[in-house]
Length: 463
Image (cartoon, rainbow, N blue to C red):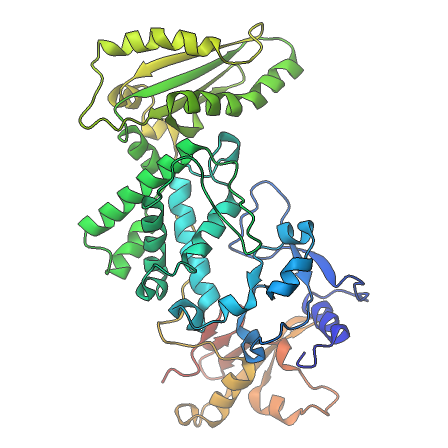
């Protein structure tokens, strides 16, 4: 690996994934079923693309053991094809992620830190139903890059880049500070904006939600209480987001779609057209969309919009709402759809009326919190296999204690041998077990795992 040998690289890949007689890929790209726990593919078959590339000039080779995402220099990024850029989870400037500008980049667990922060942000966004690209809301890729770009923002204090929860707080603070309500810029290192599909109404909603989250955290004095922030984010579910949605505006609009065409293909075509029609009405009324249908049957679908109104203290009277409903008849006439097999009705109502007609428990079911991996303690480090074993062999805190080495066998899975036996089987031994196959280290007496490559557990320095 240190000699950057492509044949050796693909041999290690074949052994790690138990691939029989793997032919070295001519283009140095291999597609494998994804086994990443945190990556959500949402209806599509997950796939991991392994790309082998030469080590970028100036890249610190000693850091390879603790990085689990691909890195490319600016020169290499220029030659990546469009498909390669889309398939990679992240295409990151090698100099950027390994720089000393941010505390995030100096920590041993920088990728784990970012991943956990993204999961917190993702859970919050899902509770607010912000992930729905067909309705002009965010998609998962743009949210991922929005969270990552926070770590590259030079205006954010370094203290917010040192802990998962503070990083999530900084994300929502940045959303609350959005200046433009006409479009959203989410750039990758290739400088392409991947949020062109996001509507102006979504940007307004994102800003309002960001301000609410920041205000709530600040009011509860949680900005510096990491445990409390962690508990707060874990507690969010779509049912809570819907309650906030119902309480976020003075006036709402129900969009009711009734389909009566007996023709199956025509009805299916109309169903596919619903998101675009909802998005059109939201743009005409300047309203936020709740993309989850409040009611959904083969013949009927109902969606809710929350109108943005920046007039301080304004609230429509109950007598004005029927008049608003009549005025929406003209708006309905502007919509382009097949009126021979469907009809669209727009109804104005207040927040309490919406909540009474479609209560939160009926619309949204409480969801369990997203899994968030536990991170090493601040300041702790995850050692590579060689360093961990040296600690166990020569550290004073591990004297008179025996340890086992768990390694991956191509045919039998995880197997164990004593640490002393592994030391005896040196490089020249026919049964030598290379470092990349070592997966766990455990105490013989109590069976406690003190080092785990997959879970990034390192207790070798704990006395």
